[in-house]
Image (cartoon, rainbow, N blue to C red; front, side, top):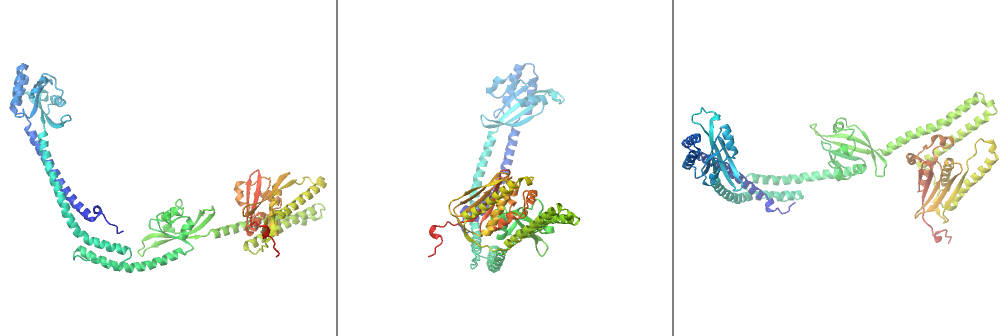
Length: 631
């Protein structure tokens, strides 16, 4: 701030330049006016001298009417030589036919008897009007004054049709402009001298003015740095002296105000920095002037990109609201944003006015509350209640219908009664399974479910689970072969292919709960695999994870449903899932269990080509000496 100022940037130079410019502008304006008037007077004087005497004009008119052109031309030449301007201008006489009858220039006698090519002469012969003008000869670089005077018959009544000729006069104005240029040169030299003298005088005067100003500037710089101890030297009792006294008083007042303001600012910054809500303050035009760190994090912005931006644009509500709406209503808004992880974030914005005691509105304050979890919880609760109600209503309606049928006498039918009771029992079992699943999810959500982890050889454990399904497959095939004639439809045939690493993988899991997870995925693979399908079970290891996957050859999952397959009560094919006895909670429970074990579960699927469910569990390789050590 206190860097050295160059002379050409200093106020001394600026004051001097102002004085010099004022002097030069004044001199130049006066000089321009003077030169213009002098030029006009010289030109008028020159024009008044360039004329043909009246008696010569009358005699020329008489000579043009003579029939003897030879003697008439001789008389015209003699008359032109008698003119007072014969030596300073070229004079040419042209008759009414445009033929040159005489010329004062001895070098232009060959033009006599020729037709005149001068346009101004032709116009004068036609109109009978006198012409005056100025021309510039580019070859010689000289300015010329031209004048064309019509010659009329002295016996005429003044009609333009009685024009019998014209006199063409061409005079050089170089002498006039040479005099003017001499005067202008003298004037310019005088202007330069005046500018130099005014510069010297102005620098001396400006130094007397700027010296106390420089002292006050130094004091202002010290004040800006927070040093209020210095005092400005008072050079006199004039306006600058009074200003120096005011600066000294200001230094004291600013020091006191600065201390109070700094304390207040620290309190305000501390409050804003530690608030869990976002705060945005704007000016009266709606542009952001203050925003705390929480609001920046909510909106994924930096302080530089937010300050000065309209709050409507910042909150992305410019299409629905304008600044007047916020000023008049100050209503609460729910705003939805997408985080960097592509998750939805919901903010509640409360607006209030920044208003002075006079009632003048100087801005708006917006307080942002993160209500994402609250809104999500309320939405999930509503959806959960709706789903539970829907899922329970279907079996209850079925049970009620069959019980009413039994009450109406179906219990006496030996064929229908067992069938109705069997359906009622199945629907009751389905509701019990659903209630048990809901209880399991509730315990997982509340954290009351006990996870009994133990180190398990995942190879053997996974093979053990698959062996159970192979046994079920063998039993179902034998049963189907024996009772094929009793059923209209045969059970599906499927096979299980294993791609399991040979290396022992020891992982900490809860065997019962993890078996439930694999059972859920395997049962889904069996349900949705086509007849004769192959279910591929894989187990492999990465650097620090064990990856277990189960692939079926079913219908697959549409892309729009992949992100929802682990939601509670979510079914891709609702009719088929309900028909096959699913509760819609199996995958939700599986996800909760896997995450409780510190792992991750996801699905990869192509519609029409089957699905693959992956389970990733944390894994630390064990060396042989790290295994059970009894000693």
